[in-house]
Image 1 (spheres, rainbow, N blue to C red):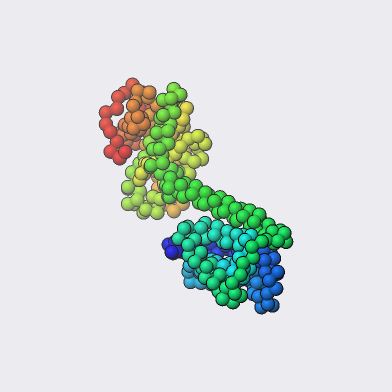
Image 2: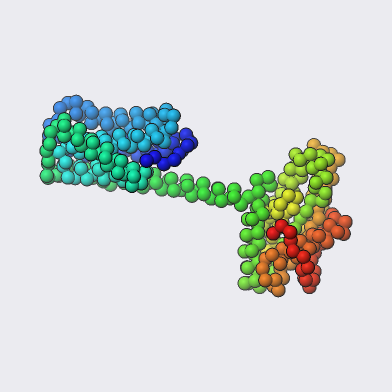
Length: 360
């Protein structure tokens, strides 16, 4: 019957939300029930129990859930107690139509929203049980008409409580939306460098390729390789290697435009999309990046010297897909490594691609 929840934090969050709605709902419900009970002239203990239910029970229920081993389950028990007591007061009021509809309607809305049809049925069973207890204590009866006073007493519950509940649901929706956006960002981000990960960057490459095709715009992409990175890890350790990767990602963020898209392609390879940038200008930008990166010092490893090999390719409208563009950049990177590394090499636009990437 209960949704699977195995974390205490989620249960406490639910308890806090229901504490606010329960405190308001039972306070407003007090006037509804009191107006329905007053003509029946109940005993003093009934008034005392009514006050306890309206103004003490919300705080006790919250503490019960807060201190429980599994707050989520405790809060669902609290909801069943709410339903039991609601049914009790409906029976005690001799089923006065408007207080009955107000009380049971608000509780049914809570139960359906929080537990679906199955929990709604469980709450309905608890309400029937509460009605049975009231019939046993007070005897059967039926009040067929609702007085004007009872009508006015029910209006706050019928108007203010749904408004408050809607606001609470809105806050929850905003929070869930924010969490969804954060999770989406995490799923697209490389955890070490903070740049786009392999899949996210390739998605952006496809978008840029289609934009260039559609609008007949130019652009360039760069594949960047840290020279002899395995030797760096072997000589200085993987911690030093991670520092080098983070330093390059930091330089990329500092030196690229907002519209540029930088990512970690994998291992020691990085990738950059440069929209609306001619190949010659892109080469100047990458040459400046290569120079800045080569001039960096590393406090933990003073002897460490690092360089970059960079392959550049301009958008070619003759390509059928983005992979052709990426393959051009990969060929340029291969040429940069073949020519001795630590340089920027551009793929000639007229040169056809001859090999495929091994890690698409």
